[in-house]
Length: 143
Image 1 (cartoon, rainbow, N blue to C red):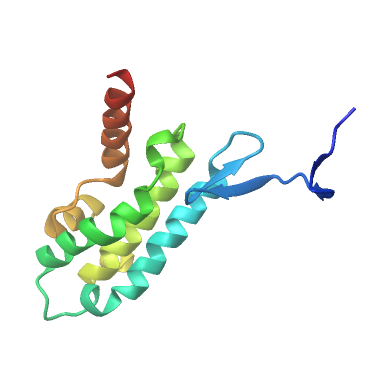
Image 2 (cartoon, rainbow, N blue to C red; image 1 turned 135 degrees about the vertical axis):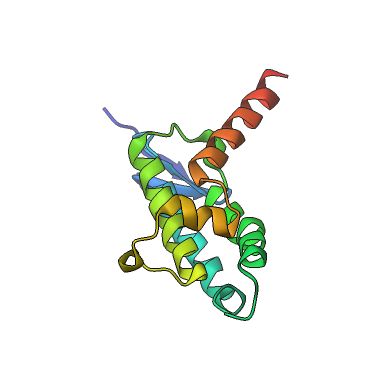
């Protein structure tokens, strides 16, 4: 028998997910909605900064620094608490590579490897940064 939660006579409905402190919490304990939301937020920051990131007169390394300080933290917010699996790593990597290729002016048709694009921009893989953030958080929790 399920109990209904009421506050001042109002019945509070049961939901599959809700937003708390900028992250989505799912009923089943998954992180899919939060990952999609973080990628969407990264693209929103990308659009806001597209004047800088898509300007051909700005050096590619400077664009990389801008990306690392503005867009990437938006995508990684709250990722310390995710139980990361291969699918999450893949979706974050795909979104990042699309952004890096766009800012460097390289398409998939140019047949340039992701490693070369990352090296020219000066950006480490986002999966490595996710792991680094989780380890930093783990050290904080252990202390």
